[in-house]
View 1: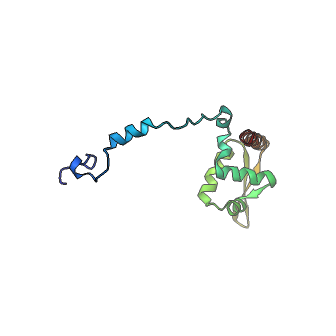
View 2: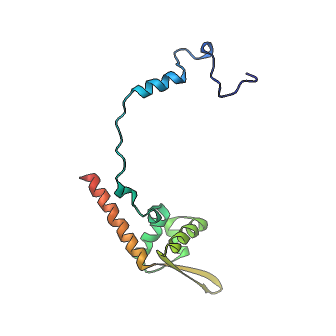
View 3: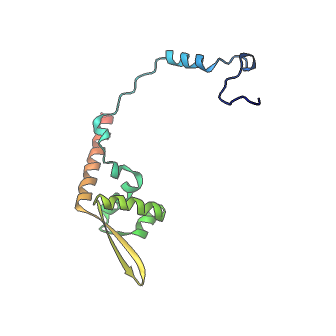
Length: 139
């Protein structure tokens, strides 16, 4: 097969018996009608994407039921790495959903997180939105 590109199709004689060329299979697939999938409702698209990501949702959820949590507490609770937690916490901090306080205890850095008032409102709005979506699917 020297000089032959991997994208070139095999000659009709070299094809396995009973196999049609790709173009024919595409045409046959096009003739089969598949049910239309409805487009997502605009409500579903308006979810708070900042909170909706799994790890950030975990951070906000944990802070909603705890007054404050340390970096180590969150890392252990969410089973994540230092890098992942710090990147996602920074995004929430930039959006002012959480506040961060960095101190030292016995010469060791200690980072504590709290949910801000705007973070709590955003989380409650997110939960209400998810509940409405679940209700709409069940009805």
